[in-house]
Image 1 (tube, one colour):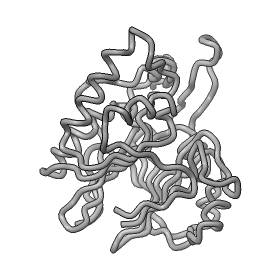
Image 2 (spheres, rainbow, N blue to C red):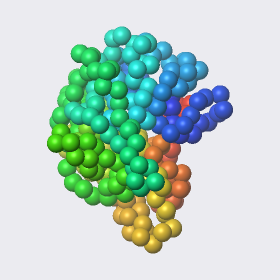
Image 3 (tube, rainbow, N blue to C red):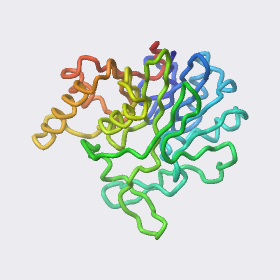
Image 4 (cartoon, rainbow, N blue to C red):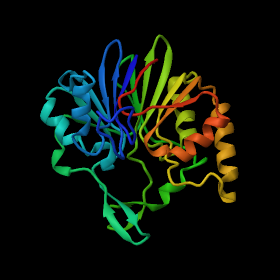
Length: 274
């Protein structure tokens, strides 16, 4: 399996566009997959630079309903007319974030893009023998503290903290080894891994995705226990290799890297062979 980072907060070279967001191209034996689209059409520019033909993508996954992961969806739809697009149920609801603690700013996806190409996931969807898309994560262990400022407008009109029921994850089975792809892990990377092991009925070999730890101060006494427990959980999960990115944050990554030897990172332009 080949994983090419089309868009991420940082880049291996100035020749690629990068800013806050995520987009991965995944090539397996049977599929060419686009996992998230970043904030705009920058991933298209980078894909061309990296030799990725987005017209050939047969499956797209939008991990959740935030525009740093699905903002480039409109550009993808213009380029690609064949891929089925998997999103979580409710991915096109209204999502907001708090700015300066009080201002509510829209970060949702464009509802006018909805068409019969979209498959709305609510549970476990076995695409075929190679791919599984799932959500409905149980457990609340080590939820990212950054979730506190992320909001959702519910059906009764109230605006409250997002429950992230719209967040989906991808499992890829190659040679009976499972790789897990997450967007931001808003439901907590530890909880997602545990669910993935249940879905796959075996260990998870590789995990790629953001952990949503950006902004957390690792030297703050109130976060010490959180980071220690997270490192212990990652070390004890049975996962052979982690690649994190995007919303994990450099400070959190550098801290975890000292405590989790199997942890690495990806940046825009990087190619990883699994």
